[in-house]
Length: 325
Image 1 (spheres, one colour):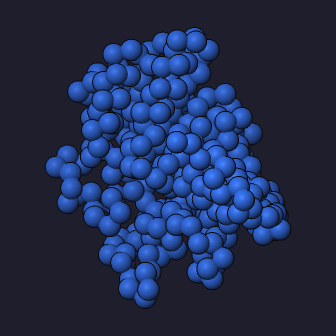
Image 2: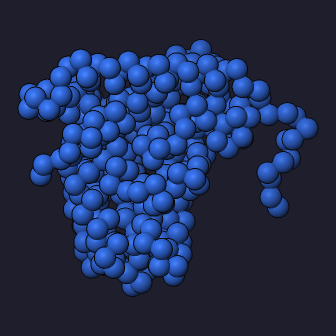
């Protein structure tokens, strides 16, 4: 499929922005400047970039515990996200939610939450609302392979199919549920096949190939807007960092049990480097154009950290504000 240069550049820009932002958090975490748990998205950028490029700003997305990439790919403000991670009043959740509670309704990011599979039902509710209002919006839920062990996923698949809701289920299968390899907790490795039981169209794509992801989601979005009902997309990918934090070191005890050879194999499949090679080999862009995008991302990340560090912390007198009984 032929893609416009503007689309290709935006996909590349989004992935680079996410990677620079994520890697910029490593040192602040290790130094103790960032104290909230951070599940870094490095390595999975092609999923967020490809999925969100296929959506409009008015479409809804819901994330999970590893949602920095979703937030940025949907067009939300990087400064507000970094400020939230630092626990500052200028953060997207006023410094009260941290890394795993990101939200920007204006950009269609209706929230992320750390409860495994916790936002799938919320996305289904948003899809139901869109269906009732007939406003042509699509609701999309990002979740990991671990969420396939939760019953709420199957309840939502069933209801979405029954009502032909404009909903897209996106499973980012990074092959590990925290530390357990997926082969040790699933008898059927093809997660997308769960859609078959509910007569939901489904597919599996290389989650490190941003064009495959973009094309699959574009097809699913078109189906939703035409009244064809929900879709399920499984994206095979891999996180480069630990489950939580830069490398899962807890008081000096290394808990990331993934084989070194496996990690190195996936590092060779880096989604950004792969797409960069594609753009250069096919002479779609010059190296200097891509380098300029990297420089812009570095500048944006630097400014985001400056903004966050110069922002005030929440006032103690407001400790009970925004808390609902």
